[in-house]
Image (cartoon, rainbow, N blue to C red; front, side, top):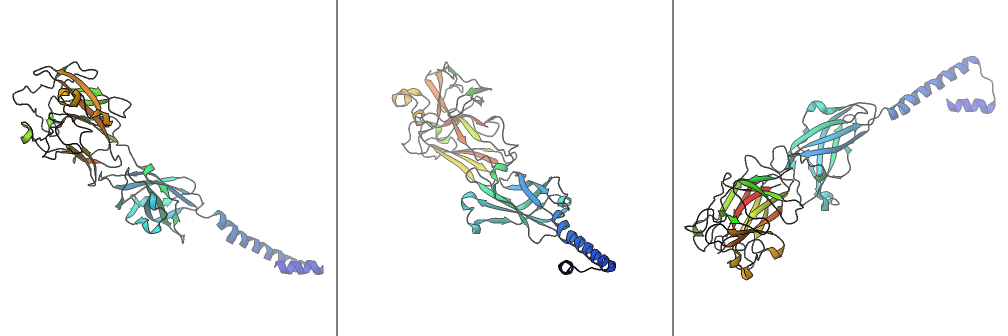
Amino acid sequence: MLKTLKKIIRKRKAISPVIATILLIALTVSSIALVYFVVIPYFNNTQLFAFVKSVRDTDKDSRYDEIKIIVTNGGTNNIEILNIHVWSVPKGLLGTQSQWTRHEAWGLKNPNDNMVAPSSPKEMIVNGTDQIVLSIAEQTYYRLEIEYKGQKYAYISNWKLLNDEADFSDLLSDFESFDLQAWGLEGSIDVPGWPSNNYNTNGGDEFGPLFEGQSVYLPVINETSYVPFYITGKIVIFHSTNGNLTGQPTVQQINRTSNPFKARKFFLLGLAGSWGDEFPVGATALTLNITYTDGTSSIWEMGHEYIDDWWYNSNPGDVCISAPSGLITEIDLGYQSDSPGQPIHTHTAGFYLDYYKYIQFITFVDPGNDASGPHLLSLTAG
């Protein structure tokens, strides 16, 4: 049509009104077709964008199984989502495509959420059985793959850090102190014939004495504020080949299977104990094992950097021999109120937890063949 018009103009020929009308109609039809097939589809397309708002571990098994995503339709047509897949990869392997994991068993929690209208961002939840593991020890990246109706190729988002989107709404925001006996730890005393309150003291350079049945706030190394410890009035003492501690347990455990929890740190009051200085340098006198609900653990093997004798006079130089390592804070408890009136002390210590996971067990294990008698007075998480 345009070629015909050009020829007429070049030859400057006159055209009849009938021909002119036909040409005008043809030109109008061509313009409408151009708008319908080229211009309108350009403005009537679908433009999908999506990102993760939060990721949750709904069953507290320390594996993440629910993701809240925000989907935006920048086009003018409704989008019907067909499938959603989640990809993950550890940070160090982001450049190795063979290490990318495509989690297949994911989909909309509510299938009716599959329609996304233009303009308004929509929040939707996807979940699946092919769960994703997050850990403080490793950064994990994700991307979303969304298939939707009418599109040959799926939408694929850019890689982003999934750890940043973890839901910590049930992470302990305050301190939780454990009543040791209420959680099944055995309370005892390690000197035959002495009163059970022989660790009660008078004085103390700064932090003693400790009173049973109440919380006491004490400093912990690397903490800017004092940590509360609940004192039950009983000492948890572990096995030793010395004295009368041969019958003491080698394992004591708090079982939180029915109520697992997340915490950033774990704090301990104790460790100094009778004959705490009588085990070899480099040996382990007590092991702390924090077991998460996925079966993984954070483990600390504690030797002289944590444990010495709580009687100052029994340690070399009549001092706390563990404090110089910088892993514990020395707590001077003063002098025993009852016989034999010895100057005694204890320790506080802090341990960093994998706060992406839920704690199932808190276990203390004594090797059983050492001469130390480490003890616990109180435990706190926060």
